[in-house]
Image (tube, rainbow, N blue to C red; front, side, top):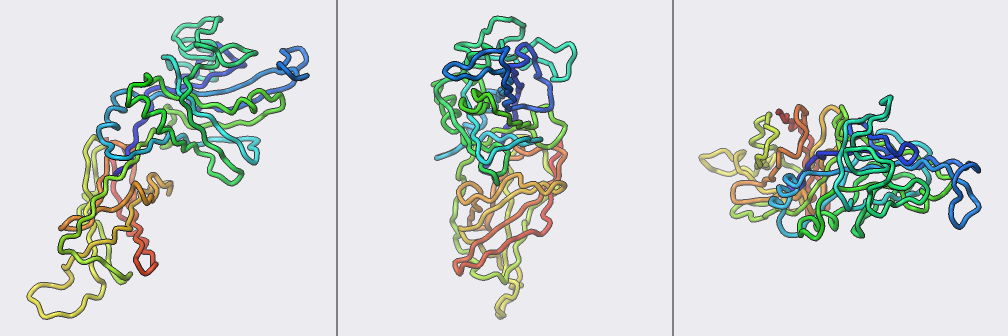
Length: 366
């Protein structure tokens, strides 16, 4: 597929209220603001408010080796997206935005969990990026004025805005950040995700967003996707279908694939359901045709019905050569020990749409 996924090597949440706590092995990543007014605490500069700050941000990193693989696969124009899946959300406002920052310095994930007692202090936390505890922040240019620390970042950043009815999963375009790593303009130290400064510095802000981490025991770990157009459309002597009276199948689905670096070419066969009668020595039911260039593929998780790779008119185009229509899939970008279903959508020149859901199921194994 021209949608290739890699998964994190490290992630953790950092907490202004618990500035020494490490949660590098927790199943949840938090991006929350739980401020409360308290006259015994710090005065917010320029306001008459006192604040007990409880900011929760997360940092997440992908390996340079996996990034190099992304770079080697992508051709031509490409885009990259950071994806995190919501586990729980509370007190969602009608519209809010999240900032995705490029982390400036190296950090250690640590081995803590939020519920650890006593708290674990062997990795990145609000105070420090390192694998040792210190009460003096070693984050360069610590970002928050009440509890010093909270990460550090460059000027290269991205964001995503959510309205009331939007899917609350993070699916943020981070092409500019990834491109700066590809070009060696910056070192890959990962991403930091936070609420906007106006929300974080508001004494009345209270919004909870919990996402599945890389240590989740679900099928929803974070991922970094890269998407590009790998399609080629040369029909040769093949005719192109022009109506919905056709049968579309995947010819070479072997059913089980390894979760490795292999690239598999799925061949899509298409023939008329009611072929024109002709006098010939071969069966007219064997006459293969091509799908139109406006044809696309998608992948769905069989158990959950979640769409793993959605139809995309730029990045999931179905190709064609002189043999048949086809599309490529990168198996290492799929979760092992899961069953997936192939879906196909075709837009005919007449305006008619063909949706193919014929239980074209395969499994990824370790």
